[in-house]
Length: 126
Image 1 (cartoon, rainbow, N blue to C red):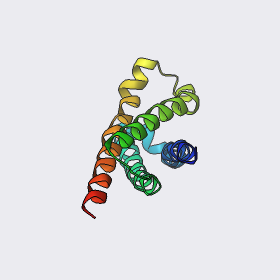
Image 2 (image 1 turned 90 degrees about the vertical axis):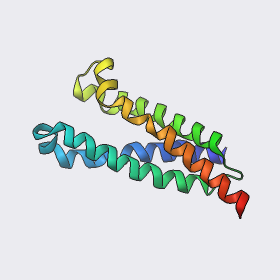
Image 3 (image 1 turned 30 degrees about the vertical axis):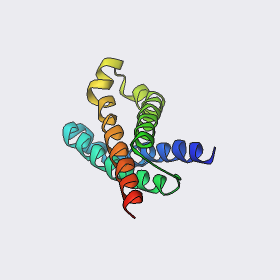
Image 4 (image 1 turned 180 degrees about the horizontal axis):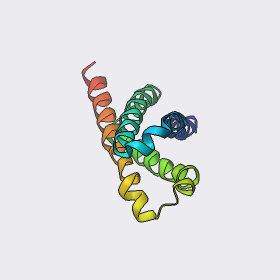
């Protein structure tokens, strides 16, 4: 149960850090939305990678499957949080949301899966 709460809690943090920093970039959003999106991806990737590593420190026998589950949960969790905290303010359609923002969460699955796989390999060779 502790792992489930950690998984969900870290997922909120992965979403909240870029969300919290985005208002500081309001002029950039209007001036160069593509660059703004790039900054959000980079920031989310750094936070997500760091939290995935922290998460796996508490998983007894992590592997790629655990990483896949972690990434999928975070992706869906971030979509749900966006539907509440982003979509209403952007007045965008679901199709446009996934084209501009939503699909950017898919790499979470690959990153978390790779970290889980590497963590398992490290444990086997230790």
